[in-house]
Structure formats: structure tokens, C-alpha cells
Image 1 (tube, rainbow, N blue to C red):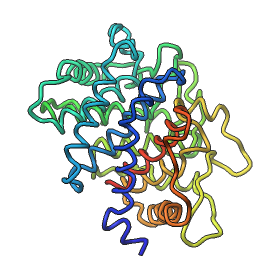
Image 2 (cartoon, helix red, strand yellow):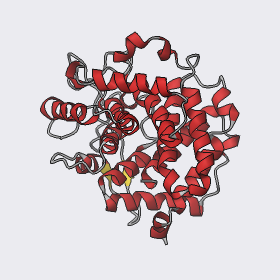
Image 3 (cartoon, rainbow, N blue to C red):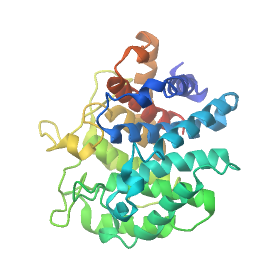
Image 4 (cartoon, rainbow, N blue to C red):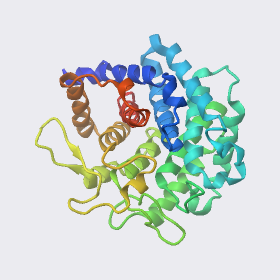
Length: 342
């Protein structure tokens, strides 16, 4: 029965319907209750991946999906909300913004096909990433001007956005950038005895922020999504499960701890996962990563916990939540749907 929930896309359809309903509530986008626009940007980005992946198996909802992708794109080009549009000279310090704004625009452009909306904005981001990543220091761009951190997860997301740009316009930027980036990680940035990078590094510290399940899980999920089926001898998926998967008393579910070792806390865990938070999204990130890498055993056990939650617990009333709390709940839904809609 649980397997049919995956095979028939029952869980995916359920979660896509939640996203379509809740992302179109005006108060989510108009509220002043939110102080962190990056959380909004990440919700919009992850939701756009989920909705774009759902289009092929939900043709009856394609019009609704496309109108929601348009709404997300319209929000992300608003320079009143995201002033990064007004400071393109600082874009080498804006990997997070470029990756996720670009993903939102890329999913809309690929879905819309013949529409002319947002072409300039998407091309600006695609060209910047395509030309600057390889020339960037350490083959990475800094994530934010407010910090001097290079974050592998944000740069992996930037490569995913570059893959959308390549699909839309045929520019051959992805593979050279990916190869140089991946080679640098392998030669310089693995954490201790692992084959995983830290959540962030700087010019003076190759492990400025330690690995965590969320930050490092997003790194491996986005790198896999950038080039699906890419054959690598150094696939980091099994390494991630080795460090972050924890035992469960249930034969159907597993736990994902936020830190690499039992009893040893990840220092500055929330800062490393920014703008997400530790202890909140680990299962959803693990589900997505398992889906990308064909980790069927882990995927099934994480998927089962979603189905059990839907079967045995009351439906969540998202509209009754404060906008900030709703945003975080929807981010979890979006991340898990990216995995189930693979």
C-alpha cells in the first residue's frame, strides 16, 4: 500500500495541491511579519522545483502550476523586495540570490516556452553564473556580501540554475563549470576523513562552518539535480547517509540527525544551513537526496514516514498559522515534494 502511494504519485499530488493552494494566498507574500526575505526566496525556489517536476504527471493541473510559477517569478523580480537587482556589481558576492532567483525564473521560462516575460532577468543571471563561476576564486562565488563565506550548497544550487539556463538557451556553460567546481572540492575541501565539504569555507579557513545534514544534504541534492544521471566515481550520497542517518526502532522509518556524530554537536549549525535551520528539514532533504541518487532503501523508509503522517494525523490547517510559521512548514513540503516528484 505504501509503495502504491509513490508509484501512483498519490503523496506527490497531495503535496502539490497544498503548494498550489498556499502559495496563492496573498497574505503569504504581502505580510510584514517576515523579516528574512531569504526564507521567502528559498521557499519560492524550492516550490518552483517541485511544481516544475510535477507538470508531466499532473497535466490536468498544468494551467494552475504555470500560473503559480508566474506568480513566483513576478515576486522574485521585484527589486523592492530583493534589492540585489539594483546592485549587479556585487553579484560575485550573491551566490545564494543568483542561484535561487535564477531557478525560479528558469522554471517559469521552461514551462512558459513562448512567453517573453522575465527573459532579460534570467539571461542576466545565467550569463553571470556561466562566466563568473569558473573565474571565481576557488571556483565558487561568495554567498552574501554580509559574510566572506563560500558555501558549496549555494554554489551547487547555482550550477542547477545554470542547467536550466542551458536547457532554455543552449549555452554550454554547465559542464565546464561543474567539472572545475567538483575537482576543486575533491582536491581541497573534504572535511577530515570524509568525502563531504564543510557547510562553508573562507580564504583563511577551509572549514569555517562544519558539515550538517541540511547544508551538506542540499549540496549533494543540487549537484545531482544539476546533471541527472551524471556518472561520478566520487558520489557523496552514501557518505552523507553514513554520517547523518541514525537508527530507528521502526522497520519502516529512519531518523536523520543534524550532526555528523552522536553526542558531538555541529558548531554554528543554523548558520551553516542559512536561511534554513537545523532540526527542521533533515528528513525532507534526505528524501530529495535519496531520490536523486537512487538510494531506494533510505528513500522508501523516509517516504513511509510521510505517508503515515498523512494517514494517521489530522490535516494541517496552514491558513491558521502565522505567515512565518506557515512559510517554514511549506518549505518542508516543497523540499519533500522535490524528492517524491522526481
